Image (cartoon, rainbow, N blue to C red; front, top):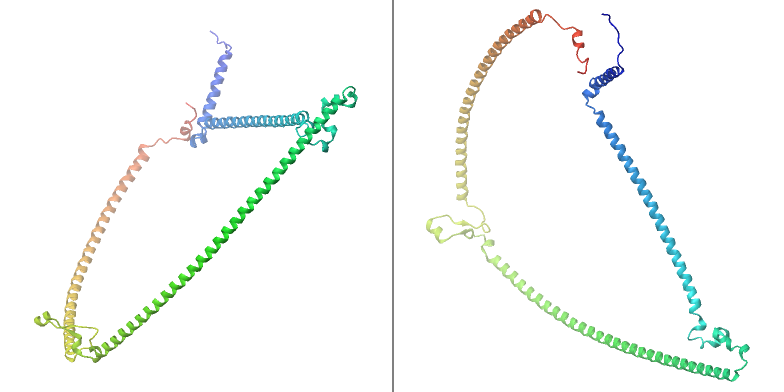
Length: 380
């Protein structure tokens, strides 16, 4: 049989190429020192970057939506303001038109009273055109009667207005008179209050002056009584000091005796404010007692010195014993360290012999560089 090279299918070639590419990507990811040692998760970082971009895009869309909403609100507000101004202008025009049509001066109730001021032409309405000279062809008598009636109405209205003005003037005068009377009464009442207040102040001032004068008199009398009392007390004190045992220097005055002390034979208590000093017997007794105390003190010092010397001897003996014990401990420690050094040297010799056995007899086949390069060459 002859060997024939058959054509390889394209799908097989693509599959092999795809596996090779995947293997290369896998090796790149696994053998990447940065990712393996530091632990950077590229996919997670890319996902975070994508999420951040999406969030920023969403925020920009929200800002654009808010801007559009603000613009729309401003347009609606401007339209409302313009509509309000238009309605106000229209209402103003309608109001002016209404006043011009329905509130004319010649149509008011006082137009006939202001005839002489405004003139005849202003008081004539549209219905009066039929009474103009062009229409006076058949009714002169009727016009005169109408004119007479109007004149009488004008006269009555003028008389009523004059009467009303007169009443208003009288009422105003009466009101002014009542106000003046009320003001006069208020002034009189205020003047009376001022007089009463001055009288009360004068009375209070007189009463206070009398009270102060009485207080001053009482205080002066009390001061005089106190001064006399103090002078009497000072005189009695001077007299007592002159006649007492303090100035006469009586030694018995410094001793206070009681019944119990006299019975028991106890020495009397000395009064310090009257004591003039000790007697010769008392001084000699104190000297004898001081000498006895000095002798006792000398004896105590001698006894203390003997005791301290005994303690010093005892301490020296203890120190010598401690020194001997320390020397013994140092000798024991030296012997222990010598024994330990000997044991360590023996262990070192044994370890050296064991290492020589491992290096020369047991581990004779050492690995070369090719042995270490075979690792980490594939992702599987």
